[in-house]
Amino acid sequence: MSTQALIEYVGKHHDPQLYCYVLLDPLAIAATSDQTLLGSLRQALGESALTRVWRADLAHSPETLPILACLASPGNSLCQRLLEQTASAAIRDLRRRKRQVCAWLFSSAPAPATAAYLSSMGRIQNSAGAVGFYPLFEPVRFELYAGAFAQADQGHWWPIKHWLFLTSGGAPARVTGEAQPRRPIPANAGDDQEKTALIEAVLASWRALRTGPLAQQLTPITRFAATQAAEHIRHARALGLSAVDDILNLVVHQLCLHPALPNHPSVRAMIDSAAQGQRSLEQQFAQYTNANWKHVTTTLPAAEVHS
Image 1: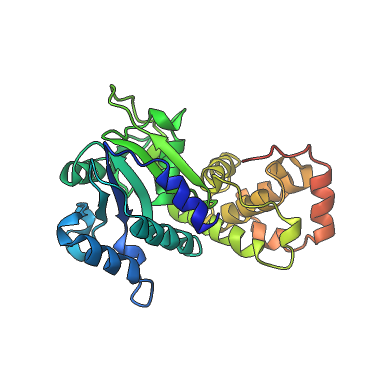
Image 2: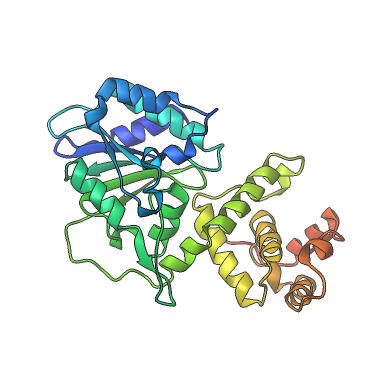
């Protein structure tokens, strides 16, 4: 996606009756990384327009707390220069493991109330009933959380009317909040959050392979790649895999070559061997040539195209 297309996408959602915020994650700004965006926002908006979002796990280092920067208040126009800067930074973020620009939020509430909501939404429980805190505002985590609902707009987003972000595949997406009774949070929402590190490792491997010499033979990264990876991880565990490296190897191969690889008898035999602790998938997959994999994929039904 181009920077200009992203600017237009965010700009068309601006509603003069709502606050417009950009949510930044200082933890994604390394000492040698891009410091210009936060500095520009601080200089243009003033410190009073920057609101910290409380995280109990970062109480010891308040300077690393997320920042909610108000780009426009109700009745005011959206500053085009600041929108351009945030969009440019978001596009640069796509090359990084952690992103500085998390989202653009159009909210009916002033900054303190919106920040309080963002703090509270991170407390969810997993299928075992254990409650944990997760920084759901991070784009990959948010994609997983929104994807846990049957429909993303069923999530608990209000007072945020529009939550805009770039997905794990680099595409713009929006979830919409309404002032209505809250639906139960899906039981698997917390489970997916606990897999985020593995999902990010899968995505990093997929992206790296897509820049290599075999890129044209591999499946392009999809719009909701993180959600797709989470589904494959759940299936890999259901097949009996427990070692992280085995799960990583299988899921990356599924994403790059064909989602139904485990349905092929030869691949399933290798999975069973790894699940029983006999030989790792890395060792077994290393014996397969490109020709072997091509033979496997051509014997499987055509893969469903993910947008």
